[in-house]
Length: 73
Image 1 (tube, rainbow, N blue to C red):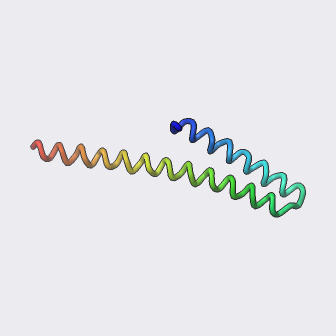
Image 2: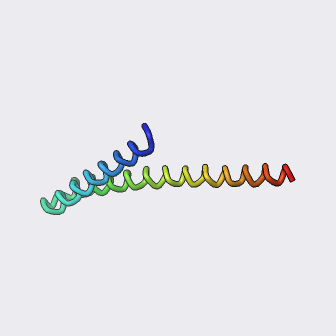
């Protein structure tokens, strides 16, 4: 799955979670409300982890380039 597809899935899961949370609040159903909060939290967590991984890769590339530049000097 590409990053764009994963991000779309996360957005879909977050939207479903918010809908479940709202439905739970309206119906005074704590179980559904918590399920919705869990779905939203999971989607946010996956998205944040993906971005953190990208940041780590980018910083690693910068360090590698910096090291290679010093090695050439």
